[in-house]
Length: 467
Image (cartoon, rainbow, N blue to C red):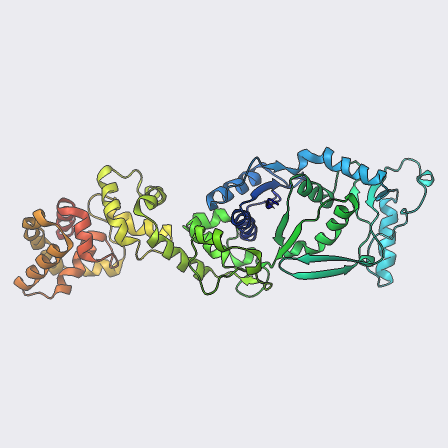
């Protein structure tokens, strides 16, 4: 059997973080078993489905690095096929026409509520002759669900789950206008797409019992269900907008790397021993449903940020440059060739301290710009006293002979010798030197900064500070 999974989002908004994890688990399971991972856009809710939302979902999955196999399936375009199955069930006696009016149904539910009973359809047209139908009423098509016994699901995550059939009513398959319901469409699409494993959030577990009844009525193969626990916020409540940014695009904007987000989402509800840093290749090799826990996970922004810092350090500079340069140019405008060269030289040192692409870009701005950097704050400005400016004026020509060996080690030795020769402590030179070169009191090692800037740019900044 070829494993086939699917991710089936509704395009009513962005790709939220819970959906991204569901997509990841489906993608990894399919890749682990050498199968297929399909994408279906469940756009049957025409009032709420939008093209921008579809574009955001496709873009989010692509950015996250979860390419799907084959063409995207759009559920709404398959409405005729869904209706065909409903009519087939009708012909086989597994469904029936219901002529109950909306007013009747409202009265039925009100009576059930008043009696303290569960509100569900009472089957009033289940065995009635359609000849008794009132004139001018367009019927819906309802599933003739089993009324006795149990429906059992052997869930790959939740274990064996059972519901009494008496608790399930005869749900609508086709509305009065002939359009299919979500429940029917999902089952038909999964069957036609050859889906073998339905991996989704455990908020869909109740739907599975109803959907399984359609599958059994049609005599179709039953998929393996795997309902994964939801993601909660730090406070233990279901993850919601009040916990912060939820869309995948927001995490991209905040400067997270897709590899880091994949790794973090993988560890939300799935584990492999004590491993925390898991590459994509390892994830594909190790992932299976038996590693998924039954308890809800808590989203922790601090952990994600720390994990992202690791991935920033491990990402080759050549891959980081096209990610960070646009962020720098948003602040400065177009960076010239010399500035780009300084960024490339400085990336390796700066990324050791950055946690996000935003922090990385902010830390590289002083390399990218030409000439004296603006002073960041009063603390930095206070270090450029008249005496310190005089020291900078002396240091600029003192470093000129070092141009032939402008390395960190040689520059450190030269600055130390300069300090000693002028009766100064190293800090009395290094602190204002940092502000002169970077505009800030915080930066990579000052000799690293000198080496990256080069002799010409360093001299320009020192003389500007002296002035």
